[in-house]
Length: 471
Ligand code: B12
Ligand code: SF4
Image 1 (cartoon, protein in one colour):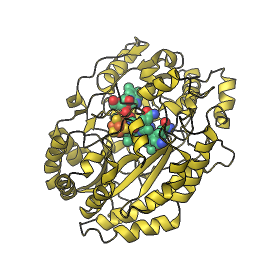
Image 2 (cartoon, protein in one colour; image 1 turned 60 degrees about the vertical axis):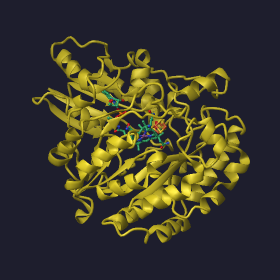
Image 3 (cartoon, rainbow, N blue to C red; image 1 turned 135 degrees about the horizontal axis):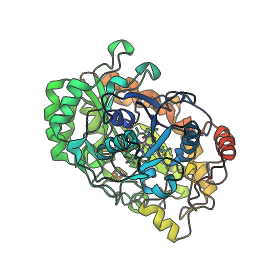
């Protein structure tokens, strides 16, 4: 039996661009780990490689995010026309299962651990059902990922990823987890064994990253107590790693030092905004804005490179704040902004529901627009065109060489922890990546105003597939 697991991708510019980067979805290797031993399994990550349209498989699993839906439907239709059975899964597929059922042979709602083995078994018996929604057997049922199927030649900067937890205890109003997923974590021994015995590392760069991996958790610090225990267990492994955690972790200096000893060299935190009104509007009270300087200094001094993400277009944003944002950032000594997006009202979030009730979702939004770089709503205090002007200006402004120089200059001597400086050097180019999403001069970045990728547009017409309208 031949199985392909495909993680699809479309670039925010809507140009056909591959964008290999350090962090990739681990869903393909996770699902491969749930397939039977006698199956031949191939993994394709469209962020790294083209999907071969003429290859033969019996069964294809698709994993996609909201904005890849239109494109994934095209791929599914082309495969189904050749007699290949397709299965959709992931958050969008689960939330819009009725819609997805029209375009895939089966749809999985929820976690893969119970469902994937059942799908494969039913397919083998010729008794595939349209929908699978077996309840989660719990985080202890997460199987080790098939790292042996990752080809680092496809993406020389990729690092292996692992999950120690799922969900998040916080409830930011724009987050797809809010109201849907509780925080739960895997048994620590399972995580340690997976790193020790299963993980394969990237051997490129003359071994500089051959002991380095990333935790792909939404929030590795969701339970500080559990994170402490995980760090204690990681100490003897002598590996280096990065993760995403929430702001509260950065305020706990002892925890930061323990994380550093356990090999943590990189943290990403969603700072989102420097404006208290915007933070309030997002229900993100865990971000204590008055403590940013201390939090950042503590992380760098512990030997951890800290990277912040910002979003624009929230209800708190004003012209005055967005105009002065570079000035506010300039005031912070230890900082690096590596991500700037437009707040996205994913349909399953409280944010979408509130905007919809106010009639503030822009007309003609389709799932392709929900990519974090397209304005899908009318913010409370700004005109849509103002948000885009600020967004484009800030992308250009933040991704400039002087910001990289400032980042290195201010943080190079902050710590002597082993591999801190290597992590710092590797983090630099991330600053330039802020401008990558705006590299299409004809794109408007406002929902309903940009054409789809031309290949998808043609194929959707040819195959008579509708786009998914969300307003
Ligand atoms: C790697 C990553 C990326 C990668 C790869 C994306 C991808 N294909 O997943 C890149 C860099 C492209 C990316 C980009 C963005 N991301 Co991102 N990313 C992640 C991250 C850190 C890890 C993904 C992962 O491997 N997770 C582990 C797997 C096991 O979990 P999962 O993907 O949620 O899948 C679970 C289920 O959904 C299900 N499942 C998923 N697929 C399938 C398929 C089948 C067949 C089955 C049976 C089950 C199944 O199984 C999994 C276990 O339950 C997650 C955080 C997280 N922990 O999930 C954020 C996350 C997915 N990203 C997020 C966001 C907001 C973004 C951005 C908008 C940020 C930005 N503005 O740049 C963009 C654009 C995304 C878009 N176009 O919509 C959000 C949610 C986005 C969404 N649409 O749902 C997340 C959840 C982070 C968060 N908490 O806010 N991201
Ligand atoms: S802290 Fe991050 S992962 Fe948690 S609810 Fe907020 S945005 Fe989502």
